[in-house]
Amino acid sequence: MEMPIDMQHQAMGYDRTATMFSPEGHLLQVEYAEKAVRLSPSSIGMVCSDGVFIIADKRIDDKLIVSKSANKIYEVDSHIISSIAGIVSDARVLVERAQVLAQQHRVTYDSSIEPELIIKEISNVKQQFSQYGGARPFGVFLMVAGMNNKKPQLFTSSVTGNYLSYNANAIGENDEKIKEKLRDKYKSELTIKKGIKVALDIFKEVQGNKFDIEKFELSYINKDKEKIERIEGEKLKEFVK
Image (cartoon, rainbow, N blue to C red; front, side):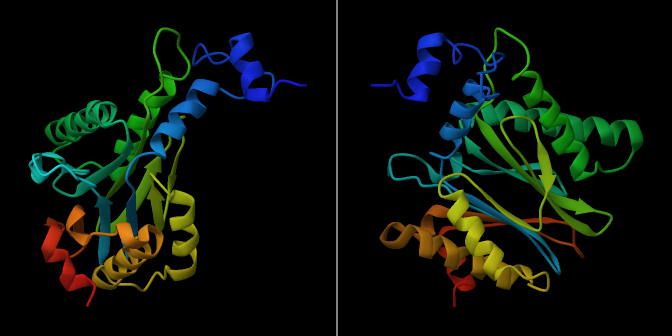
């Protein structure tokens, strides 16, 4: 009986370091990290006609935990927000790096940083941790949304350090199912309010009986105000009417 390919890789040691390619051309530690990301609660980001938003499932089931201490959406700068899927402690290091980068840009150039510069720098850090020995990859997908000269933008960085710009995207658990539904329902003329309703409807379809709107948090930026607004829990019900 032939040994399954995954067991062959383990037996031959191809998964012992992030820098060793398997005969098929895979970095197995990177692929394992991507599997860890897909065990994490999901986030949806969307570029709308009047701004951009990210809505995230916090999935806090323990009533002893203070809900506000377990945020999934972070403020990088006054015009940039970020959400993560994967190992939260890994993500915290990357988000703090992004925050410092944004502040350094303000001090140096007296202007706000572009969202793409943030995602590019974070992606470069991720790439390094898949190339050099003695370290493991960051087990994180990072979604960055923000404004660039009144233009809403959305980017996502993978475990490998690749990043792309999106009109709408999902990271975390069931991301492929969510993206399939986004492809059907996303329209560029959606407003933030209508886009949030679309995202919540998709979460409801995917999660079924497990859907609980009180476990979600939302951050959005209107392109006219360029100010981050936060809503979570019970207050999100106004978007599903």
